[in-house]
Image (tube, rainbow, N blue to C red; front, side, top):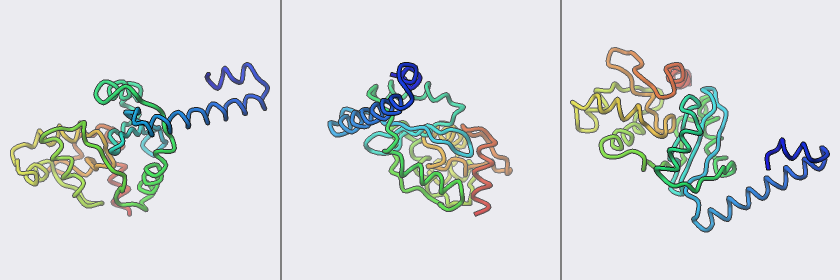
Length: 204
């Protein structure tokens, strides 16, 4: 039952009690599903300086971080098809990552401890994403440099494609990859978000 429906049928005190009860039931459902490994994905949406971010994780780790411009409902539908349809909102599960993101955006954190599940990336794209985590905070590499570092110096366009389809941006920092001429290149979250992330790191 939605909060609006609850409030329409009850006094304010009753509505608050019912809302709390529904939240508690939801938490128990999530705990039971996780305990019986019947949950494919948990998710949460958090606010950030670059807009609302969808966080989704398997038991292995963070498997998707999506910007608001990607349409969170569409992202969840895609995850249900690609990973599994047993998906529940699980706010508590992401408390640690939410704090890490807050610290990162404020310049207090330079790397993420949250485990990452790269099952949505394959082949060369996964190799690129693994390399991106080695680019130091506050530094950048060109697409050509990343291609060379992954052993495929001619695969510059493939590096661009890997960055453009990075399922866990920010945590796996594809924003640190720029054009050889100093231009920003592309970014799934938009160029304003990419510039913001680079400026946060440059100022720390």
